[in-house]
Image (cartoon, rainbow, N blue to C red):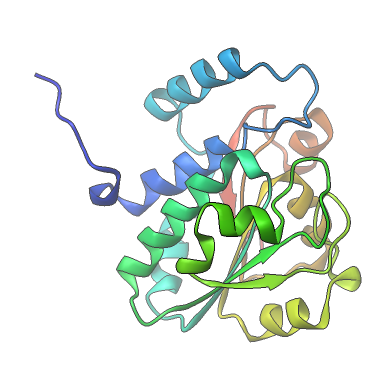
Length: 202
């Protein structure tokens, strides 16, 4: 008989993987099809692993951290992000979590209103990234975001847009969680397209 597991009891690595796979839910992507995407997500959860995996390093650092900055991406994956944040806080109850959203609606990225709809304000302090782009470029972010970025012991950045904007900062405390959905990003990272990635790279 197949066992049923509650998501809250799963290892942190599995919940991180679910969040990375959730990054596939991107209504702004070319040829997006809900039915096909649902099938692919379920298949990946069961069968695929990270091509680059630094979840253990992240978990070790998490237990030593006081402040985490979580940078949101697409609205479609945000429920996975919420579950991941809740799981992170169970492992380190003393952790202060700051959750950054987009200043204005950009394609389908998370805004303040979206955060409230799914209760992200209940799991962390919401901050306006200041970004009006489909990704966070540090020099174009708000003072509030830059202060949170500098003060954080650990940063979790979701999605391709945030990867493209923040990888140039070469900051070791930033862990990127994404699916490499397009050829340029996959090539830049050095992995096959559709690879699951969780790494700080530096």
